[in-house]
Length: 149
Image 1: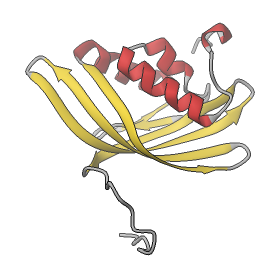
Image 2 (image 1 turned 180 degrees about the horizontal axis):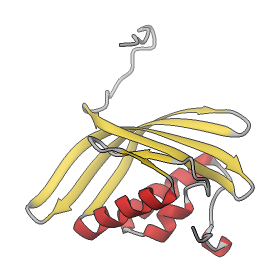
Image 3 (image 1 turned 90 degrees about the horizontal axis):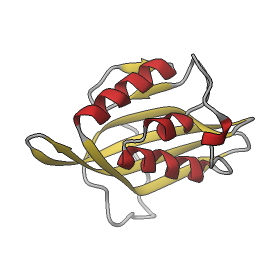
Image 4 (image 1 turned 60 degrees about the vertical axis):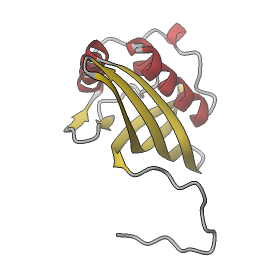
């Protein structure tokens, strides 16, 4: 797989900057910017709501190229919960999605987990896993303990 030119990388000082570039690329339909958010690693993974697991940059690029050819998307993270360590970060994100398809505008809330690693090129995405979700809560009760399953 050809390497992306380093001049295309204008971010990467933090996981937040990489995430902002990822969502900007989605909104612009910019495949080069989108792919520059991803690590240059064969083990990167992406799962779209209801879709298969995509492994590697080639499969991820092909899926986004096909999507951009069919629709325009506005994806806005509305809630981000961050867990950050020295060389990795996990963001749990509620996304407000608007997709313009030939039959009109479709809206959804998507729950996504974005995983970033600090690489020699800066912070890069290594996993994006998204699934359909309910509308995000507007208030969080700090006394309520989370329940797993």
